[in-house]
Length: 222
Image 1 (tube, helix red, strand yellow):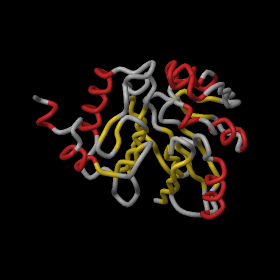
Image 2 (cartoon, rainbow, N blue to C red; image 1 turned 90 degrees about the vertical axis):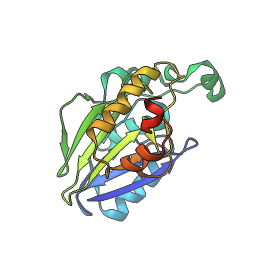
Image 3 (tube, one colour; image 1 turned 45 degrees about the vertical axis):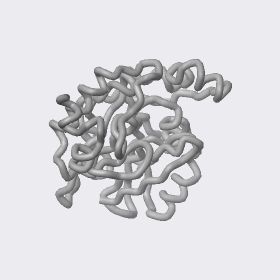
């Protein structure tokens, strides 16, 4: 499997390209603000053509370029329905303080939207299993892939980071729901799962379970 990731924009949100190999189709995950140019470069370098565009959640640092990318390739954007409202009204998910700091932001919905549910998303010889992980936003999702090589990947968006978890103090955030979502990930994902978060470096489920203060068993049971 080919995985290409890069941070983009002022928020340094990670955008990912997933493919069975170079020279074919790929899935694009979280094309946020500033992602269009580096995404185009990565597509050229690896001779890839987008076959699907997905969003782990609806915050603008993860979907800012989603309409442009999806529409340019005639593809729908896959996003959970709970977060669809944020595509056309991005400041709704940020709260008054962040909204005032950013100023007016206008985004358009992609021409076509596909509601993410529990069903696998199959494109470009890859199968993504979406896991609904509310907490950071009501429509947050984690994308699981089991590679042909035998490994497991999890694109966790802003649900789980290396050493931390997503904030829940923005509109739609829910700390109790996030705690339940983290428990779901621990039950569902093998320890050697490679975690590709929405910000920051990669990690593994086992490493986070041992060191992340939000996931360590002694902290969760205390």
